[in-house]
Image (cartoon, rainbow, N blue to C red; front, side, top):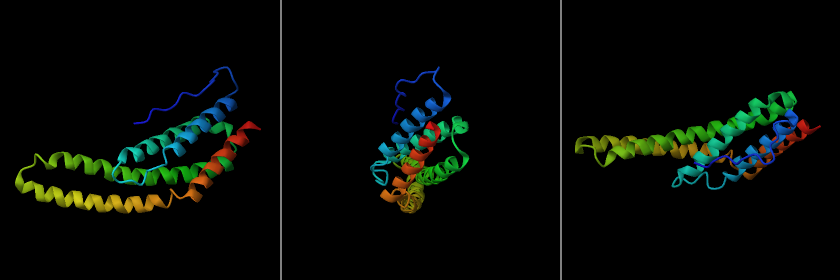
Length: 158
């Protein structure tokens, strides 16, 4: 799992709004840094890293909520939450597949067929969740989210 970066020049004596802008900018950057390769079903850790990054960003937005205008806050939070939900749907399947595959080799012969059927169903659900997620991962949707977050940070600086 990717570790969160330290917030540079974080000063506990600085105004709350300054802390908000620095933390939200950094956490937002991490979300977009982890967006490459998320749809790759062979490397599920990329998706996991992006999902964790969205959760960190959402937590930062909640902590610093008083610093942001309500309309801009909702305008940034809504698409971020939708993205996080889509990441979560895919991640749930990734985890389930990994879990059941860990039993497959050591399972009694009578259970292997059932496990393989279950894993095949989960892989189909994973594929469907990935297709849904793909609509959130377009350049346009990511650019819109980035613009909403940039606007939010800009509004806090005023």
